[in-house]
Length: 254
Image 1 (cartoon, one colour):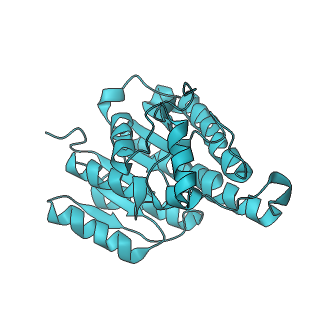
Image 2 (cartoon, rainbow, N blue to C red):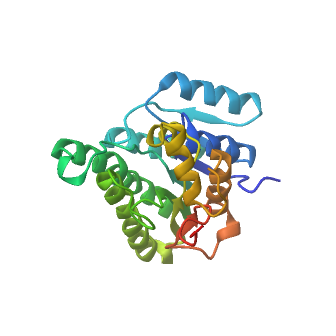
């Protein structure tokens, strides 16, 4: 038996990186999935991979900041699979990077919209479905940036990701009595397209590695395993947490 047998899950940002790894893992563990990202070709490839392994998944491509899309994700989970148990709200972007006084107001607003407002919109439509189901687990992908460390040039990204932790804690407090858990992951450096973009040179990559006590960058599959823990009943008494999945960044002084 899989850890998510009988469960229905939404995974956003599923076309690559952490989202893709989590979708594949959740499917292997028995969940039926509704997946989304902007790139339809990559999403269709993901669905075929899941189906070829015996799983079930439906893809809805679009922009995560579009409330019509996030509403459709929850509606599709209920209509096609009977309900919603898990939501891994993982979609995000690095956004405009510059010294704080050089970040443009439009760049700031876009990063907040994609990383934070979209997460609120997702939760806004996921929570009623979970209440109707009698409970569920909502997971947000936050990061060490803005929560454990401040990295130059990332003011908008840091603010948006730190905001996710506040959103997580309020949801956990509001909906815990109805069986809904909400948690965020504080993710360290991970080998994803976004991670490669933020550390584009070998020198930058080595610097990011050095920030971690483990002296390496995570594979997306390692972060997906942490998401699986939070999605599953293995974490049944965990809610409102900002769970480090960070390779030891805060304790590293070497």
